[in-house]
Amino acid sequence: SYQKPDIKIGVDRLHEQVVIAPDKKIFYPDSVASPFGVTSDGQKLAVADTHNDRVLIFNKIPTKSDAKADIILGNPELFVSRDSFTNPIPFTDGKRLIVGVDDYGVFVYNHIPDESKANADVVIGKTPSGVIGGHAITDGERLIMVCRGCSRVFIWDKIPEKDHELPNIYLGSTMNKDFTDLGRGAAQGRTGMNEPNRVATDGKHLFVSDTG
Image: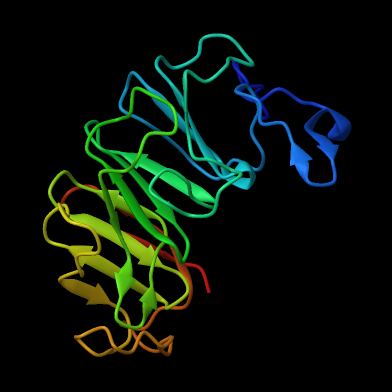
């Protein structure tokens, strides 16, 4: 019990070393703020630098503490666009990199980027009644996304190849099939959900963390 880790990612710095002015921060390649997820293809490691609105990619899983990231995705000084996001959560199936963002869509990279600030190949989440987004994964064929804000899970039966393709399937309370009403459903019975925030699959089963 309470065994210390062998390796630590994230250099501890004083507040004044990071915030150098009221509206100016320094974003280091070897530090993270409230990391909210990690993912790996067995060789590379992607870490969510959540409160800095970045994803740090290490081309090899670090073998020493406080390693610097090789690639940094996201631009904290910009609002959401093809190369920037807020509070990202990364996932890889070994081929693609999927970055889910609460209420701001899902960013699909057809391969794990090899350069910083790369643009996503596909961005999805825009619907007739607003933008959906959240933690997203793929089993290599389908894309599965949690929408905490509308208490549902959305499934695309194939990885989208164009921006803002609508999902084919949804789980949760009944809604309009044309996505003109994304109102929060009631969390009742075996079909209702209340702020689900994580999803996982083993290829056959789907697991949803219904946190509310």
